[in-house]
View 1 (tube, rainbow, N blue to C red):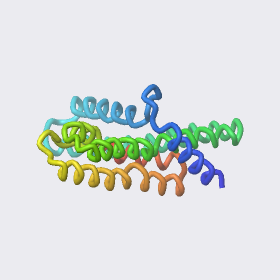
View 2: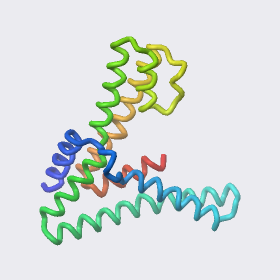
View 3: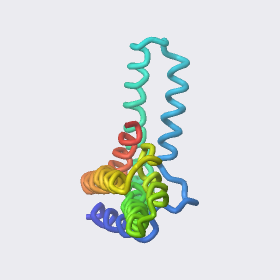
View 4: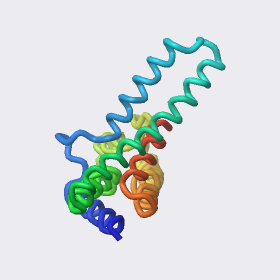
Length: 183
């Protein structure tokens, strides 16, 4: 039952605050861990295709398992102090696992520029949410890029993390984020 309240609280926190720029985000640390593992394993392992596969397999094991164990231990520690503290840390991490508010904000920015028929501003707005070059996109291209990105990120940033939260709370949601970050 506490997981349900952690998920609900996390969803509400994300809806209100999103991802404030001043607040460190777990995905940033996951990225740093990936870079550290990559640098370290490249020094240790042979510089062959087999060595690279082994390094990739080690990273693919360490990051998600480490994320789950670390976040699970922190949640357990806070629950041991008091169940309210455990609930609060789970709510906080559930909120950080979601990207609903940011996705809505950024896609609305694209929509506003498209509605004004301001193609350069629409291209700039869509460039904030897509990984491709947007300089040559037409209005239709900007629209398609925004819709594709919203659909993909709704799955990656909202639906999948929510499902993981409902199954295993914040630790499983953060583990999902770790796996998704490696992608």
